Every structure is written in structure tokens, then in C-alpha cells.
Length: 428
Figure 1 (cartoon, helix red, strand yellow):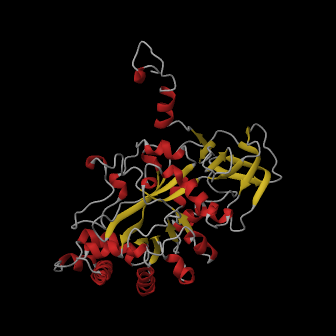
Figure 2: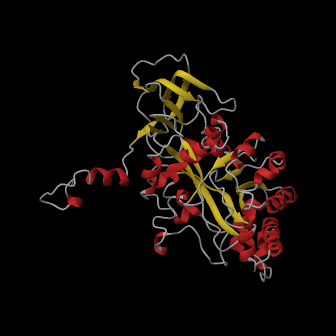
Figure 3: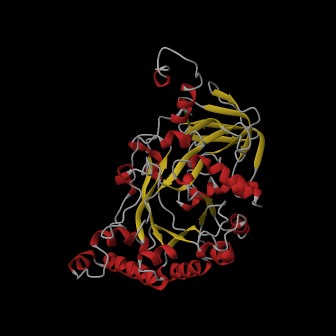
């Protein structure tokens, strides 16, 4: 994976003012999520200035600190959703409130999630209440081969929530590419290759490309948008599921020196050793086990476990309702992966360090280590149990409210007795 320099953005994320003075979490079951998978019992964690400044079993408590006793409960890094439409889709069934994709073939790779992002979406509050502190937001390839550029956000409302913009181009191959290329896989691959070649031509000489005949070529805007991924300077997240299609994508990674991420990857476990050797991460839905089409015939809930056993970097996402509005259910995806054979520590990394590594922010996020941003969650039980909930959520060292639209509605309608005012006005 290419290393992306994020020093400026990490210092100026603008998500919130850091906690004034040090904050100490004591009596904690610390899930470090580092490669060795350590869990420290009765540990302490200290945050100051938005970052973790000390963590371990024998940490001295600074004077004047705000202290939170975790009561022996799990403390983890904030969870990270690796694929979502948060801020792009407010109401999926309403076209005007859904900016996740376009069927306009004239512009696809040129699209940028930042231009359609609603930084005041109510989905942020709901997602944060589930222990999620970061997410990758990306356009959808829709009816085209390429969808556009995605970004990493913090679970904060406001324009400062964008941590890093335009760091990965999304694409689709397999049956999706075949549909957009007239019904043929080979046509989809040919169009994909031609698009990469066009982007490389643009990168070599933008002015010459702009003057050339664009018949059957990418537009200047799309060529410019795809060029960073085609040259390996930017992630290329390819939605592909069948083993034979994945094998072709891996060969193109070497041919074009792509910084490749497999998304979907229903049958990637069948090529787990090849995927690991190619150092290609897989963003997978761990509960997908039904062959909804031919390229998913080998779907199994053991796929994530088999990939992790082969030392593939794995992250979890939901392709259905959990993609955006229920992204908060990410811990349940991990719990199902554990139930299907994945090691608990591996599953914990798949929702923390795995996504951070994929998107090049592992120096700032993903583990409980000194110097990292204070994205920390205190839970009331095993995070992967459906009955567990966050007690405290911190983003860059500042505790965030867990109140959201659902919790407000639940509070409003607790009392269903008759009153002088309609229910919706009683708590105002």
C-alpha cells in the first residue's frame, strides 16, 4: 500500500475542540487492537490535546485530570466504517435526497464525494451512537464503471468533519461491468483497460489529451479524475466478487501497478494466498452467505475468517441497509464473523486498524497507542454482542453526545397517556 501523508489534515481536522486538561479512563479492559491483539485488564488511558498520551496497565494519573471509571468494561478505538454513503443519502427512496450515484456516462470518475456531502445529515448522530467515530464515504459506481472519489470523515456534523478528501476511486467489475458494457465480461474488462490507458495518456500530457479526438475515450474531466488511481498514487477500490474476476483484477494490479482494494470479495477466500501475496486488502460483508447471483455462488460466512487466516487485511461493511442508515450496526457484523470462526482480536482489528490501514491513516487511528488521535469508546459489554451499547464516545479526546433522532423519538413517545397537547409537541 502506498503511504499517504496526512500530517496537516490530522492536525487540522476541525472535528471538535479537544478536552481541556487531561482525561483519564481507569479500570478499563483495554483492547489495543495492535497486531499482537493484546487485551490489558484493569488498564488506564490518558488523553490530552486530542490525543492519547499514555496507555497501559501501570499509568500514573496526572494531577487535575477528569477521571472516568470504566468499571472493568471494554475500551476500544473508535470503530471505522470502510464503505458508506453517509452524508450522500438522506432518504434513499427520494431522488433529490440521494446523491450517491449517477447514470450520467459523460461524468463518472470525475465525481467527488465532497461536492455532494451533507455535513449536517442526521445519520452522523445515529452512527456515532453506535460507537463509530470514522467512516469512508464514497459515491457508487451505479450504472458506470467508475463512481468517483471518496473521503474519510469523522462522525461530527459541520464542514470540518472531512478528515481527508479524495483518497480513493471506486470502480466495478464482474457482472456490474458486464451490464454497463452491453452484457459481456470481456467487454467490461476491455472498457476498464481502455479507461486506465486513457487516464495514463492524460497523466503523461494533459494538454495533448485535451486536444485529441475524444471519440470512444474518457472525457477530459474523467481522465483527470481517474489518473491518480491509474498511476498508483491513489487507491482504486474495485467492487468484484467472483474468483475468476478477482484473479483478473489481481493481474491488472501488477500490470498497471495499481494500489488496489477489493470490495465485496464474496469468493476472495478461494484465492486467499494470492490476495495476501499481492498485499491487497478486502472490504467484505461477513454475513453474505446467499448466492444472489452467479458471481457469488461460493458465498460463505466463513470467508472473512479464511481471509484473516491467510494474513489478508480485512474490513467489514454491509451492502444493504447497513451501508448508510444502519452503519451503526458494524459491531454486529464483526460479531457474526466471530460466530463463523474468526478470532475475536482479528474481528476487532477489522473494525478499527484494518480500515485505518486501508485508507492510510493507521499512524493516527485504529489502535490505543500513545500519540494517536483520541478516538476512544467505552462500552457496557462486549462490543460484538447485540445487547451492548457505548457508554462514552470520544472523538479526538472530546466526549460526544449519544443523543440522536431515534433516542429523541423514543423519549418523546414514552408517555402515551392522554394530554392537552399532541404527542409530537409535549416535550418541547
